[in-house]
Image (tube, rainbow, N blue to C red):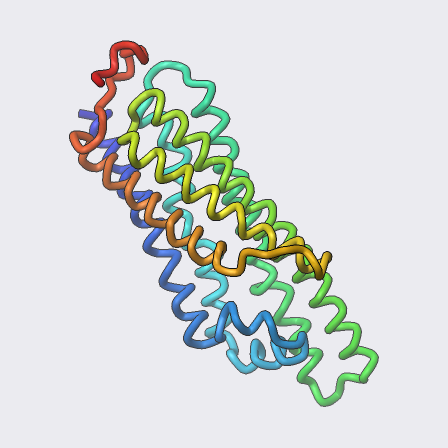
Length: 250
């Protein structure tokens, strides 16, 4: 009974994490024109950010931490599906934890750093030199916190976690093989979004413009699919922890 409840709890955490993260994201689209606003100048971004007030800051805070249920789901997944030692799941769990943490660190710049820079830019008492320094600081922090931490490292670790978890499921039947294959496919599409990051420093680097959007949507659907398969294990190849690969029904 404990194992069943743990599995169901893990499934709920996966589903909740995938759904909750979209609430602040939708608010950012409506109230901050995100992510299209990132194509505007630093001054325009900071000015519009300041205009959003405390509500926008707390929306970013919610966006950073909305995935917390998934974070706990990542930690519990191994215990929920595999009783024996599983090196692949151990590595996947560690990678998933890192993915969550670096993305949160990247997003929190909008909560604790950007507001200060925005205040300098819009303050009439600020000198032109101070405004220019704030703009350069924003560009530097945005490139490091956003591109390096959140998008490059965060996405790569998320992609790696997805592939490792899907490979483990393919071998051990933690969830259906078709879902494992879909997870790997979504990760590979998501990987193409890295081309846009390299284009920020290599202007002629070829990019796949829609890879980020398509890959992230596919990935979130995979998360929900894994959660559903944990809630109703009969829809997956239910594997008892003591079974070996050769004992899994085919």
